Amino acid sequence: MSDKIFVFDTTLRDGEQVPGCQLNTDEKVIIAKELEKLGVDVIEAGFPISSPGDYKSVVEISKAVSDPVICALTRAVEKDIEVAADALKYAKRGRIHTGIGSSDFHIKHKFKSTREQIIERGVAAVKFAKKFVEDVEFYAEDAGRADNEFLARMIQAVIAAGATVVNIPDTTGYCLPWQYGSKIKYLMENVNNIHQAVISVHCHNDLGMATANTIAGIQNGARQVEVTINGIGERAGNTSLEEVAMILQTHQMGLHTDIQSRELNKISKLVSTMMNMPVQANKAIVGANAFAHSSGIHQDGVIKHRDNYEIIAPEDVGVDQSSIVLTARSGKAALRFHLTRLGYDLNTKELEEAYQKFLILADGNKDIGDDDLQHMMEGRLVSNNVNIIDVQVVSGSNLKSMATVELDLDGEKHSASESGKSAINAALRAIDKIIGEHMVLDKFDVDSLVHGRREGGKVKIRVLYDDKLYFGYGEGDDLVMASVQAYVDAINKMRFSKNEKTGKVVGMAS
Ligand code: KIV
Ligand code: ZN
Figure 1 (cartoon, helix red, strand yellow):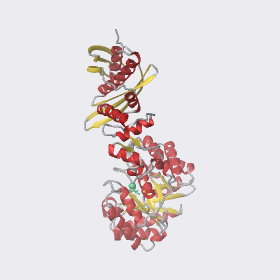
Figure 2: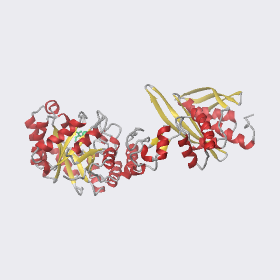
Figure 3: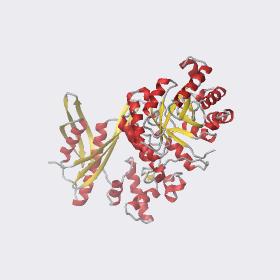
Figure 4: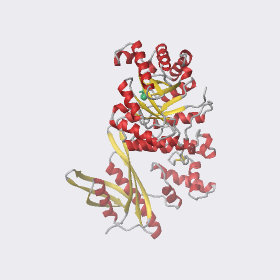
């Protein structure tokens, strides 16, 4: 049996069925070309009968892509198959993917039919598709819950009718790995023409088992995996392409894919952005934290030897390097690592002193950035001499936004009111009026935080003052307050810097 695992990507069909993820044809062509670079064997480009957009996408992807097989989905219905064949007319190698339900749930409650009639419909669909293309894949929908003896009869009949690939979908994500693996084993042992076709595994993630089930399937004889980038797909999603590819690359199972793993991070970001579907930070392989180390013990271990806490080299999946995130839980090894990177070569005593300062700094901040470390090393441990006393804002669709801000500035109370384009803008302008300095707001990023019915955000801003950049951070349930905190944080850093240069406290507005 071959040791090559064929990768069938269904991001543009099963993935794209997700509400809010719809793409236009041009966008699908961009992703299809990236999938070709990634090295997938088959691209499922759409379900042509379902909409003119899907039809057009199959046509355009067939024209734009030459290496992978282009596949079009149908039901076991002649009209679907005719339309799919027509959409595939430009494909160098086209495949029709037809099929019908195989579980008793589907047979009785969806098709109101019998097992024997369903086999006949499946066989007829394969024979009809064979009139148009040589390569016909048959899917036995909901095979995960189908009776194995019936499923084996169905699969044997469709292979005899000409199916080249037989897809055994766990449509509802029901199976456990040992159950799904033994289903594939059963088919390998009980379908007497099974070697005339490739078994394909198509798993959904309703119980978080999609990748494990896919691996169980290939361990038992399947040689094609149906997957999506970032695991997107109906409900809890499909099997993630990147997880399967990296499992086969990491473990010596005697199996391989043709996936160019260094492309994974790039295509993950492209799909996430285009489909408007954020990747969870702790997602395996492509999540923002997949190569980020934050606890002191892990940071120390990874700095001593990367293999201590990393089983995949980040560059193998297209990530530049692992990150050692500095937080209050970081240890001295992580601090030394970053300070060395910034050009500070410290002896043990100096590191100890720096670490004590760092702990104070880290206590009041979420993440410590390079600018914070630089300030700290220059002996400028920022202590706030601008503090927020009160912020009041008024805004509405027919009102100009107004803000009144009261600040404690070097121990004295000052307040100012300003109008602005938004409540945040008005509040920042009121602060400018109190501080009396001309700062340029250079960057303003908000990461939203949603806790149940409470919403808020983390605000990161950057201000330019006297040719230098100062960073500020704030967070909370109220975005105006988080923004004010971030702005005041940056102002405190700016005032420290200026104070040091002039040797006195910065002047206030008169
Ligand atoms: O999950 C499923 O059963 C499918 C088929 C249409 C292949 O997506
Ligand atoms: Zn599916």
